[in-house]
Image (cartoon, rainbow, N blue to C red; front, side):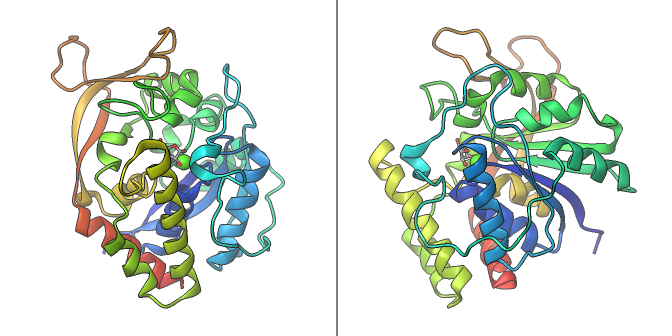
Length: 310
Ligand code: RIB
Ligand code: CA
């Protein structure tokens, strides 16, 4: 088996971010070097406390966790209380955090880990790209193997009709990362909505008969409830683990090459990701775009990781 891929997971826990942390920590194909947090689903203090609680719950007591940006590059921070609740991770009770916060700011931790790594590190981002954009100004970009982002969409949005939440939260950061020339993969809503947490999926986590499995089932039930309330969707699309799954088991997701741009000025379309799947604009492809999920294989990855950690 090839060596595990070293990653840093930049996130805004968030129910689906929390499951992304578990997949990154529990899959043998991934070496989770650190978790960094960014204001997104909730304010920085809440998403950072949530990351520490999730790590505590999963027994990841040596996992470096550092807090990053409290606000986007230009926009004001807007949480998604209607989706993730006031704590940004409402639902099952979580333990008090026993994982200390790294004293370094997220960008410094990212820079230090990149410098120390003998191989390029993949930056997996499941929140707004604010930290990643800041890091681009501070690190040796050759040390970044790729940026894999749960964000955007080849189609409609979820925060506005045409903008996905992570992209809408900080369009300037997303535009900077896409334009950086670093290998970039977009894992958008078109893909993540294939990862529906059906009752059958939730039952698989309950059947693990572990505290961790029961908490994951509780997260999926809470997340499903808010998605029904807000969008009228029957099951929650579990967005963020899709980005980690693509690194852990690349065959689980089919990707295509395409030109991607981020709208930053549109009156009604700010934050929209423009994905030119048919090369109609004449620009060279600058990204890999996730288009198809092997659903059974995906859920097996997550159930196995939760079993491994539980
Ligand atoms: O649009 C979905 C994304 O926004 C996910 O990362 C979710 O956690 C929220 O941050
Ligand atoms: Ca997220």
